[in-house]
Length: 272
Image (tube, rainbow, N blue to C red):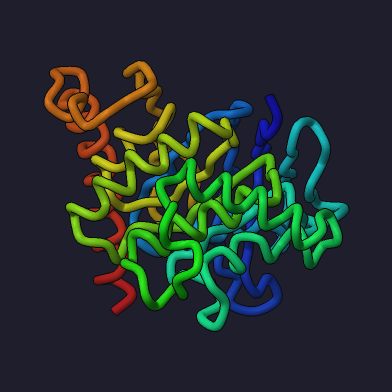
């Protein structure tokens, strides 16, 4: 297994010589290789800042982040090098609208020189079929549903054989029915690939249904308030939502998140 993430005492301060806004405050978190770790917390608390630091988009101020024991960033090397071992699926999507779904999925390995066009196309067709995308390979992204587009993006990310998928509220804009289908589709893809997933969400039901663990973050500055191990066995389907243990975990998570939401609201009122 690959993709173990260690976030070790990480601090992120924006504009240290001016406003000095602390976004992440001595945050430590261990994510096992092949684990789905769900990150929840109030809006603006610093969750995406943490994801961006892992991806190599933002510098950290102190602490360090490791991937499989190798340092990605630290006080001496504040910004990680972006790499195909960590792939981000953004909230607003990033498919090329002028390329077919198949061309989108095959694009990365060809551009990086890892595969020929024929090799990438063959692999993409197989992965798309496994992900329930057979029949829409030659459609353009604008010709399929939002749920299908999300699935295409995840398959495109997995084409690069990453160690880690970094998902920033990928299903936020979807209706509840489409979202439930996408949850099961993501788990099916995960069971085939067993990639580590760092998944930011505001949806508590989503967090518990998908995750091996849920990291509940404090209001800004961000650090874990509570780490909840989701002791419901995989593979999962939507039947677990009616189980007693699922309801207990929902109540425990909701209580912790609600406390931080109240703090975030109060802080906003004071700032206003």
